[in-house]
Amino acid sequence: MKHLKILFPVLLCTLLLGLSSCKETNADRLRAMRGDWESVKNRPAFTLFEENGHYRVTTRKMTYRGTIQTETYQISEQDGNLFIETGLSVLLTYDKENDRILLSPGGEYKRSNQSLKK
Image 1 (spheres, rainbow, N blue to C red):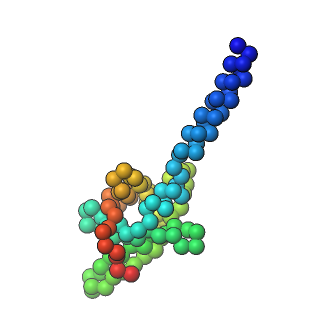
Image 2 (cartoon, one colour):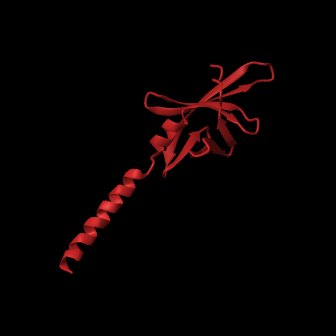
Image 3 (cartoon, rainbow, N blue to C red):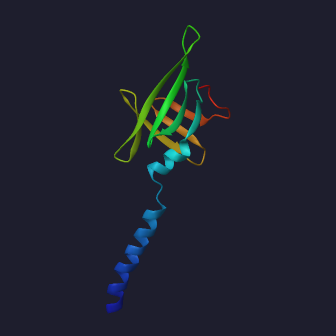
């Protein structure tokens, strides 16, 4: 019985350490999300990339005059959630199984098969 009192906390700590090492971090998610993304519902496409240790999003949209307008925003983490800082916070979530990004507000995005024009 004495051995169980010592063995149980050791096994519990080992289990918790093992589970915490399996947890995917936001840095892992951001690495997996790098690339070009296009909207499922005809919204502006964007590119997610890393620059100087910070992740950023560049959006591209066609203006009425036919020129391409680009805007770049930084991605931040607050309380374990990822946000695109556009003046408003746009929640950024990643579905690894389907390789989809959901922006709230903003809708669903799928990975683009072709590189977006720079």
